[in-house]
Image (cartoon, rainbow, N blue to C red; front, side):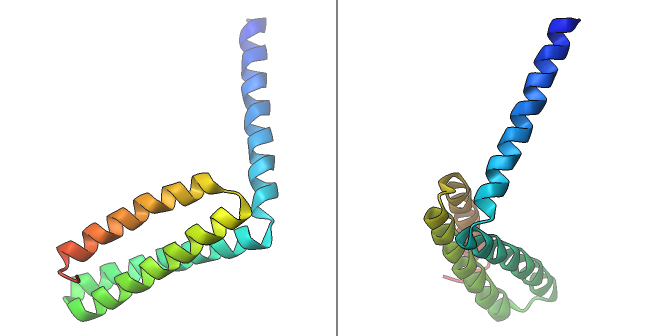
Length: 107
């Protein structure tokens, strides 16, 4: 029982240490700007979904282009602040964005 408690405590301390490291990296101005760009992209994705429901393909394509710009800016900012792992994750978002553009015939 004691070894289980020690293992659990070790796991929790690891999570806390990881959270502190991420929070410290997030406090850098470039990281703050990058997170802001990701949030803007998420808001634009919601707008694009609404435009898809309305059937406004031209506006959907414009919004998808704006989303790509925000993700590219965020990826560059994350690279600058040292959070390359997040930048790699954004590459998958950009891949999904390219697929959405093909589906909506934006290219």
